[in-house]
Length: 427
Image 1 (cartoon, rainbow, N blue to C red):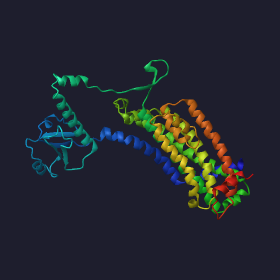
Image 2: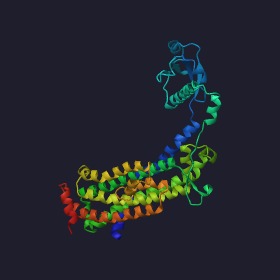
Image 3: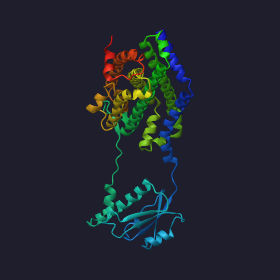
Image 4: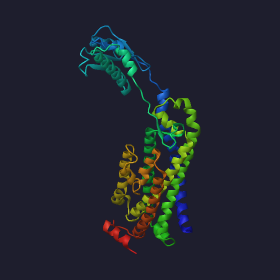
């Protein structure tokens, strides 16, 4: 164990001292917080300038009913000459666009054209289209000669803000925990992709380290003092410790930001204004919840890394170059890619049979289960998944060690899958 610990500390110190580790450790949480906060800040404080839209309405039905706001101001022209309006209100004027409406707008869906002097946007176009659609719908309803139609439409107009809660068996909503599928979707996506990146980046690091030492013949010297199994476990554990250290630093920084920075940027009254992004910000402001997610993330990242790193170590030991390892890496990567695909199904139904079983299979469980956890799944499922994952890691290490102990001494020939099977069976 002392020899294994020496290898662990050597692998750990070699990577932690690198500037790249320090830079990525600091920048990653800042990037995550920035990507989360920036859209909300832009929506709250970065409103664009008001745009003038000149309306040329040949139908005389739409222009007077368009509602101006902070984003768009509509000005109606008395004439119906579109060409003349385009010439008069060209790019040199302060007019954003000319809205041309033909006289057959009630029957022709292509009778509306927006002629812009500068670049348009989806929100602007959606705003204009939505207003015109509602005006036309009301005009068509009038053809049915319904008395007092405006009052009826105002009374039947309804807006629902669906609030979801987790049932605690009491029937008292005030004591139930509120939930949001949108927030769970975003958190699940972020956590699933984080695990995917950690497994790929650090797993490849294990493989590259094994190949480099094998080619430099350092491994031949190490084997004189340590067994191949000790070397493999030392490398895997050392790099795993690097990943755990990085995640722990991220956890401290992000939990600190959720405790102090986010409440300062987004006070409670701002978060209560609603919207998906505000719900996400409110969830990230809960330091206790974020800490719980990081604990689960750490357990699944560690288990998933150990499971896959042993395969990457076996792959690196059996070849002489990174290029030769691609044959085996493709097979190792397939379950991870499958996990990403299945993760997308989690957001449709986090409790479906397919998602459940993929969150139990160790090849896919780290990514899929982390995508499910924000949806408040039962704790026993999380515990079972972890038990299967760590139990499978022990079995995978045993298999990988069989390949590793033979592969590190093989040079000049890339083994076939049949030869790998023979190495596993060798006593």
